[in-house]
Image 1: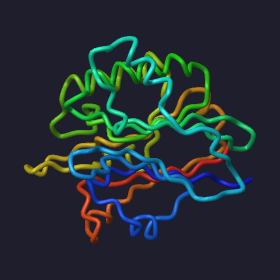
Image 2: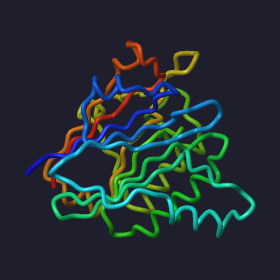
Image 3: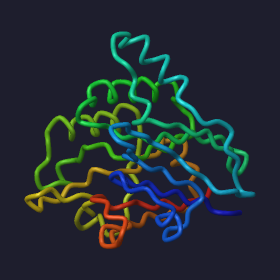
Length: 224
């Protein structure tokens, strides 16, 4: 059975084909792609015989936004969903960038969307602008509390590399060189129970080449 490889990466406005040439994956979940002041979040995929992209779109979260925040224009550039058929199993992949400017709206909509997907196979990736206390040298309490609520209430697991049993793997450093893990990969309990094997690795060297992003990427390889 083939494995599925997903890379999530905040590219800090610097998307180019060069990234995809350097880091090969089946699905790329990019955040913070920008043209002028327009934020664009995309998930790009290559052809594969192991999985099928059944659906791409944000229809349901648009409905939720209109229901709960009719006065607010949903920022589609911060959210993208893929529905994937892999090994005859349907997996919903949510790629999110929780911008500090719209965090209240996006966090609430994410929780409501996860209620829709209860007991389903879900992969949740992206830049959450949030870290647990043990993942950051300068943690924001609200961020920590939100991630804790998501995991405790909705039954999601954060997937980490083996090295993180000892110390966090920071994915972002601020101007004062404080390390933070703002980028995460979560999976639902339903999917976690089906994983036969998986591997998490970090793409740190991307910050040292010509792409010049200020985040590390995360690579998730798994088989069910």
